[in-house]
Image 1 (cartoon, rainbow, N blue to C red):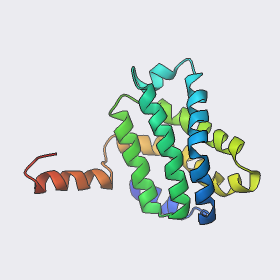
Image 2 (tube, rainbow, N blue to C red):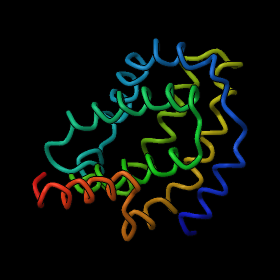
Image 3 (cartoon, one colour):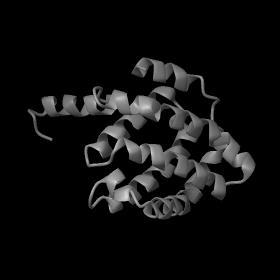
Image 4 (cartoon, rainbow, N blue to C red):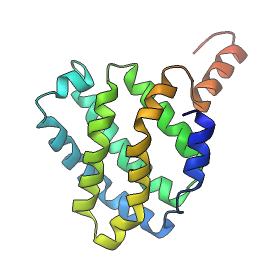
Length: 164
């Protein structure tokens, strides 16, 4: 699947309910901690995230739930696809494997289900279902395609004479 196909697919998702954003923001830290505990119970965790990356993993879990709370408030398919692509490329460059995303996203979905009321969870369920069903596509694309955000970084480096 190409990035344009992911964009078209993400555009077909039902719009999340922006009213859910503040509730998710309030619960994001608790859900992130619960997700980290779940992942730390995995015997293959070190293989999934690379050595010395437990703190980075916990940070990713916080960022994940905070991002979801923002996403439901300001849903934009292009931004969604580019952000997922950027996150995969960023974390994989630090030792995380594709297997981490295949393990983490369903666990994040289960964590959300446990911490939200059924009607609240049902409003983000399509996002998680879509993410879980397309993570393999993102992994393939991330191997050869930079995110929009990365292209902005290279423009900034060029503009400033190669300085970071």
